Image 1 (cartoon, helix red, strand yellow):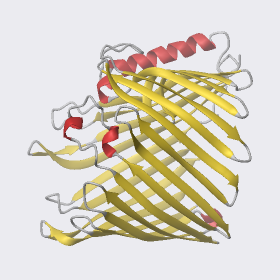
Image 2 (cartoon, one colour):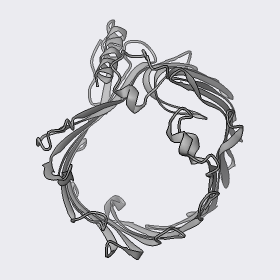
Image 3 (cartoon, helix red, strand yellow):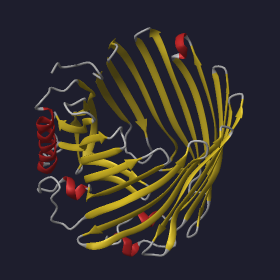
Image 4 (cartoon, helix red, strand yellow):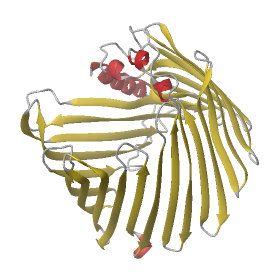
Length: 425
């Protein structure tokens, strides 16, 4: 907790130094406050929980220096009703970093907590990212400390880590506007000063023709000397609102585990899964129809498959009202099941809307004497202003794995203040 507060304060301090010669010109962001209420049993004792959540996002641009901006986002939770006597309060700084673009947005420097997505490197980390982007060429390098549950609770200062966790990597790419982009990436990480990951990756996004595009990636583990993630996603646009998407994804789930984790000892390195399937989307005016089918082949287990259909209709002024239905059937699992989804949104008046969302499951074999489960949510929302929305919701669920059905309440207030404030120098 102290680590996140320090990161936030240090980031704000850096911004303060950066904008000292001139006040920030633009401030934008979002605040979302959610109050929930429900009954739950913990440690064989039933009680009422009333947690209050606050989510925030703040962006500062034109911060006194050309190309400099500051971005931060996080959330906090406070339990307003003191049951049980455990500490249920929690806070999390999702990201908070300074972003500097120079030389006509060619050179980028980003420092702080951020989400890194550079080929084989993907995740939150505290560190520094440097990027060079030209018209047909680009390169980026990153170094820092991976953000895990342990580092979030660490008492150490920003960018200071005593556990020996490290994360570094980079990506080089070539692009051509009429063909697409191809990238080569490398990632290296340590945990407790021991080698954890050494990965190479190739990714591509080929969009030569508007009729068809192919995106995908291939990731290779240098330690186990095998491909641990291969994905190919062709998209065919047939015109007239018709789109066909095929996907192939072969992955090793245990590759996501730390090689220094005790769980990796019990995980099977040969437990590979291949997901193959396709989705067909067809839009005719206000109606959209979807059909999808997937098969999951496990090298160390039984194969499964899933198929489904969906139908959505938008109507009314600006097509703001929506009605949708979906059905999926899962075969090959220990207990096969059917999934039903019904959703509707209707604007009673311009600023007042009502939502109903039903999700139900029907099992081939009873669970605790019950053959189905359901989750039903109803809410009413009102737009107080162009940037403020208030929503109240009630959720009912009936699950055979739970002793009793549950009723939960929710109140949500969302306030967008993007570009709402400006300060003169």
